[in-house]
Structure formats: structure tokens, C-alpha cells
Length: 287
Image 1: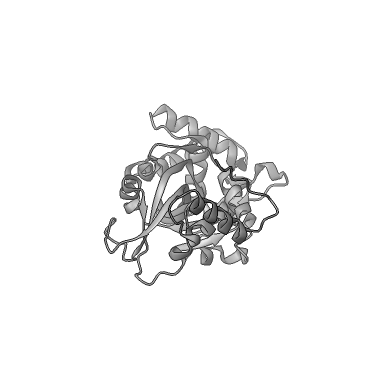
Image 2: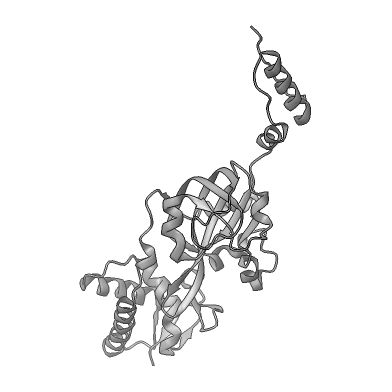
């Protein structure tokens, strides 16, 4: 009986040939050398842009493709690579990009079949599984910390490609932002039009009440949001404080309120204008 021992200092190609020769010597079948070399490579990391309406089908089939039959990057993806998913989601009247989870590549294969309806590429990717983020991660909130986003002012340009290679360090930074869950996430239907309308009306009503009861010229945004959180909970609307703050940040421009800065950075809340530009404020002006 032969015992195969792989010595660390043997280079990749020599190791592949060595293993193949031993298997042949033992009467085994011939191994495809290219496949063995692929296994020797370290896993790579990718981001993949998908349409949220296709996510349930992707979750069911555990298969990915590309919209173009001439897609290039999908050919470079191999088993054991990891793919981060991002998609556009509605928040009020805005549609922003969010990371929602990742999948591990089990295998790749070529087949002229549309598993998802839109996948025109011959190359397909079979996923071992999908892990979702407990809450979606707004790409603009983390873009400044990602190495593959070179121009921080125009971060959206780096999320145009259907598939894009990213450094492992960026992959880990994104994963650290949220806990992972195995079940299909329910946040794609969190903010219905009715809920949006209720939250906007609640902000206006609470603001008018604060103006009547408080003689101050201004109120801390975070203090106001904590009051708003309690108010909507009283009416049976289940929203976390973070969800309330996110909604306020993205939609408050519609009410044309005046906000002012703060000397205390702990009071800052990121507010967005209709074009998606963000500004940091600490107070709502009441008078």
C-alpha cells in the first residue's frame, strides 16, 4: 500500500502532477489537471448586483447567471469563491443600493438553459447556500471604508457591474456590519406605502405637539426620534429605533424642516437631500 505525502515546499504544479501520477500508479482514473490546479487556488470574493424581484427564485434554485450572453466576469468565478449580493430597495420615494447577504459557490457549469428567466449566459453558478443579513446594509454607509471604491464621492459607479471582484478585506468589512440569518429576509416588504404615509404623518403631528409643549428654539434630532419611536409603537407599528432613524434620514427633506449643527458629534444624524447627498445635523429648529 502506498501512502501519499505532500511536502509543503513542492510548488502547485508539481504537486498536481505528483498526485496524478500516484493515483495512476494505484490504478486510479486520470484526473483533469486543470481542475486540480483550480482547487489549489485560493478562493476569490465578488459582489453581484441582482434585481430584488428575482431574489426569491434565486433563493429557491440556488443558481446564478448573467443577463448578457457575453458576460466576462462570470467566467472567472470558480468553486469555493464567495459572492456578496446587493440590490435596489425602496425607502419612501427613493431606491437605494443595499448589501443583503452572500453565497458560497459550490460549482460552475455550462448550459444553454434559463433557470431564472433572465440568465442569458451559458455559464451558470450553483450556490451551496445563501446567508442573509439580519438587516440590509446601505452601500453609502460603508463605501468610505471599502478599498475597491477608489472615488468615495462617486461610490455608485462601483456598483454598476453585474459581477465585480473585490478584496477579501472588503468582504470581511461588510460581513462585520450585520448578523447573518438563514431564512429568506422579510425586509423587502417592510416599508409599504401605507406605513410610509403613517410615519410621515406621525412626524408632523409629533413636531406640532413638541412646538406647543416646549418653549425651546430647538430639539435634538435623536431625542425627537426616541419620542417618535415610542409614538409609533403605541399605535402598534413594530419598528426599531434604527429603522425610524433611517426613515427620518431619507425622507425628512419632504417636510422642508430647518436643521442645525451641533458641537457634540454624538448628536449627529446623517440626513439626505432629494439627490441622495448627505449632511450631518444635531437639532431640529422649532421656531
